Image (cartoon, rainbow, N blue to C red):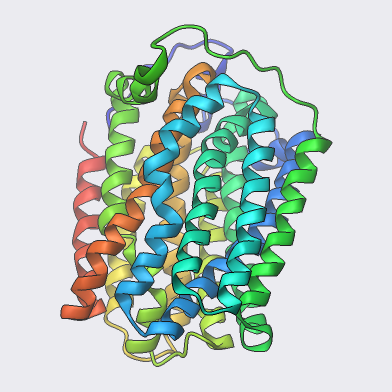
Length: 421
C-alpha cells in the first residue's frame, strides 16, 4: 500500500507516526490506555457478552444446516441469508451512522436482531428451512445497520492516539467470543438442540442494549456537507477513490473476503468430509474454539507487541502467512493436527484483518467515518456470502479442498498487491 506523508504535529497524525515509527515514548500500551476509558470499557464488555451468544448461534447454525441437508449448497445459502444484507444494506447503515445519533441506531438494530433471533429459534424447532432462512436474513439486516454505526462509534470512545489499541481490543473481544461461543455451543447443541441455542443468543442482545443506556452519548454532529439524497449512498466510494491507502485496503479486503474466506462458512463441510469430525459434536466446537483462540491472539497482537510496527507491512506479511497456513489446513486428512493448525490460521487471519482495519480508521475523518466503514462492512461481511455461493457448487462438483486451494492462491497474490507502492 502506498505510504502517506504525515505532518509532524501533536495531533492524530503525530500519534500515527508514534505507532508506525516508534520515534516517541509510549508510556502504556495502546490497548491498556483504551481500556482506561470507562465508556469504552462498558460497551466493550457488553459487546463481548452479546458476541458470545452470536458465535454460539453462528457455529450451531452452520452445523444445523449441514445436519438438516448434508448439502454444501444449503450451508452456503444459509450463510448468504446471514451475511447477504451486509452487501445490500451497509451503505444505508453507513449513511444513517453519519446522519443520526449512533448510540440510538445501535440500540434499534440490536433490538431488531433480538426479535429475529427469537423467530429463528421457533423456525428451527419446527425444522422449517424456509422460515429459518427468513429469520436469519432478518438478523443479517439488523447487523448490516448496526455494524457501520458500531465501527464509527468506537473511535469516539477513546483518544485518537489510542485508536490502534481500541480497534485491537474490539477485534479481540470479537474473537474471544469465537473461543467461548463455539465451545458453549458445542456443548449445548447436542443437549438442548439448535432452537435452544438460538433462544439463548436472543437473550444476549440485552447486554449490548443495556450498555448503550449505560454510557454517555458522545458529542455527535451530523454531516452537513457533501451529496444529499440517493447520491449520499455512494459517497463512500468517492471518498475511497480520493484516498489511495483507503482504496488499496478496501480492494484487498474485498478480494480476500471473496476468494480466501469461504472456508469459514464451509467449516462444517471441511470437518465432516476431510477431518472426520461430526459437526454436531464437542470436537467440532473445539475446532472452532482453536480457530477463535488464534484469532484472539492475532487481533490482540496489533494493539500490543505489534503496535509500533508499520501495520501496512504487517498486513502484507499476514496475507503471505495466511496463504501458507491455509495450504497446510487444506492438505490435512485427520483431526489431530487440525486443532493447532486452525489456531495458527486464526492468528494470521485476524492479525491481517485488524491491521487493515486500523490503517483504514487512521486515514478517515470522523464526519465521513460511517460511510467508509460501510464499505469495510460490505467488503468484510458482504463479499463472504458471494464467495460462499461460488464455493458451494464447486465443492459439490469437485471437493472442498479445491475451494481452500484457490483461497491460498488469492491470499498469496494479495500479499504482493498490498505491498505495491
